[in-house]
Image (cartoon, rainbow, N blue to C red; front, top):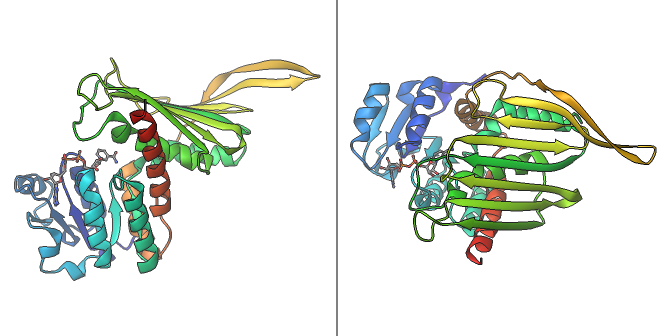
Length: 328
Ligand SMILES: NC(=O)c1ccc[n+]([C@@H]2O[C@H](COP(=O)([O-])OP(=O)(O)OC[C@H]3O[C@@H](n4cnc5c(N)ncnc54)[C@H](O)[C@@H]3O)[C@@H](O)[C@H]2O)c1
């Protein structure tokens, strides 16, 4: 049970994505408990359309008169500001949910992780797919041996999407895919390879392909692009007894289970190839689940699923992939 009255929330940054955090918080918490900080004064009008009880300030968080009152901060400013804002918040004793990517370099993420541990504060990163009911169902299925031994995972996250000039497609999209793969495999890769191409803007990759090799012969790849003729969000998870296909961009039949593969019978390798079954799951809102998880971790003193350690591991993979991309 979420005792929402005990959460006093500051949301720092309410742009394209941060506004979703504001709307979600407004659906979960008393509006008087939410204050939005955004340096762009035009934000106020958008906040007013959501609620007249949510306070707004264009001043930096630390200039607010009642900073001590807040026990939770959501940071949804541009990535390059995450480290400084999150560090200041934690040094002021705040539990923090930072949007992805947590920071720009692993050393900064490590510093935040160490602060969270030494100050006993919650540090969580907005890897929202780890709150998607389909991903949780896949994880549960893997744990229950539904697809046998995990062998290969791939993710396509493709669209003719919004291009960014401050980060490439890898940093824009792949944190989500890496976080899911890390969660499903439950280990860290022993090798990271990456390749990509910059076509629209010099030096900013529009398309990247990242390969991950995990212990126990588990392999994965991630193909992300904003230079692609149609939208596709497809993740395929292959085990020796079956396979899942998760397509979040579909309206129906988002998650399928295929009993397909190969098995050895009397020394002969035989194919098994049954039709797929649709797996139904409760259509909960991942961002609402993410925020609830953050609030509950504070109220119940539990470790968030996407804690600082998970965030650092994802960032280390992004960092290794970037070094491989740039070394091409
Ligand atoms: N989890 C997801 O699925 C997801 C999706 C999109 C974006 N994001 C992440 O969310 C973050 C924000 O992305 P966006 O697309 O909303 O960016 P944006 O540029 O649309 O919004 C950023 C907002 O932060 C404000 N801001 C900047 N510096 C500030 C400061 N120091 N104090 C207060 N306000 C400040 C700006 O005025 C702006 O309104 C990024 O880290 C991005 O990667 C996450």
